Length: 156
Image (cartoon, rainbow, N blue to C red; front, side, top):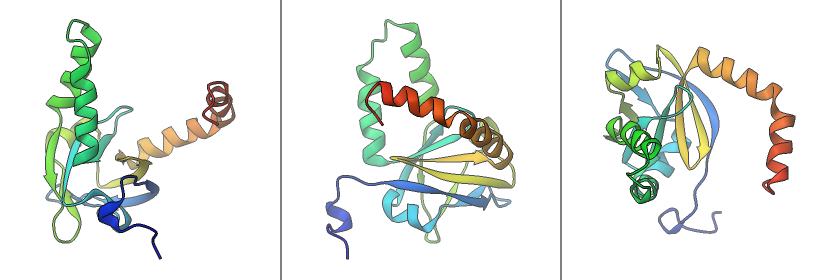
């Protein structure tokens, strides 16, 4: 039994790795476990490392506020804001849990038929299957070093 009703939870967690296909109409099914957390309207944008990021609307609003607070006088801030906002779309999750991925986002993330959908705490990422497997292999080899660095700043 859950300690909190879904609508009253402030914290949520998206975790796991799922392989899904994009259909011929550029739709991908979100894992059932993610649908209840994300809601019916989401924001999809170009992520980093050649993937797409998906946020539930309240989480996107937090990111939007932080990015809007950055100085437009700094070229790096302007560039990153342009990247994030120009590629962002608001999407609706249909009655069977699919979202439409526009061609420009599909191309930016090199999404083919098979994709990997992963939960990364407060966001979902969609990866080209081959790119994800290659990325994951590299990161797994660096896990000890990464953990050491996180330990030095008190994360682990």
